[in-house]
Length: 288
Image (cartoon, rainbow, N blue to C red; front, side):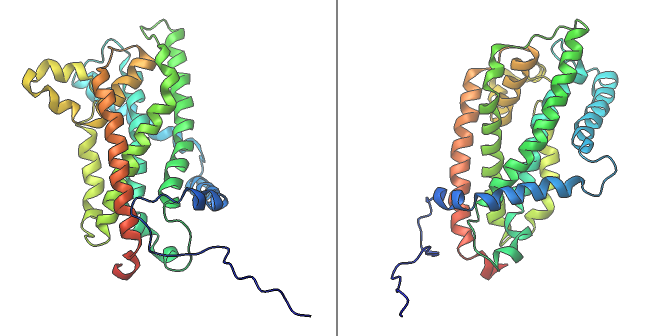
């Protein structure tokens, strides 16, 4: 009895594909692997720690407390009439999601070169698992932020959430697109230029202080010559943070043009990052 021959292949792996192709079907096929990576990242973060998942909350809490004493009590920086601790906490949870996604994605090729060289799976899974695992962290921090927000509402503080809170998923998606896009660009460059690994952390720290987290946008606009106001809005996170604080805290209405710019910037930078990522994944193993 002879076995039937199957002339077709179940899967065909090839490096010859369009730079603009996104392997949606492959990602869906490897969805279990994606979820496994996400679970691994979340669990290993606190598996051997005393406080466990509380570290997700401690990070924005301690950062906001330090900023409260330095920038509010010492530097006397205003916060648009919002309690300063709540003001910076709102900015910090968005910022941490952005910075964590950016840093982890920028190390995609250098940190995963061993597994990339041994087994095949869609490489785009690694940036996606970064966004998803950090989304869980963001969710925990967001719940903490809402708890603090309700406390200040109970105390009668001048905080007034708006209907715009319904657009939170779009805000988070926009942040993820910007972070992943920039991260994939940097990751593609670090394959050849390893020096970027040493400056990325320093660069993220500097970028934080040109982003309206510890100070309101209105303060910069008041101090800056009107003809240079556009410089503030060149930062795509400015519109996002202004909208987030407006939606949940009731600060000044953001410029809708800056929010539109942030959305377009996210789409463009994610597209450019994906293009470079697809180009680099073909031959990076021969370089590293």
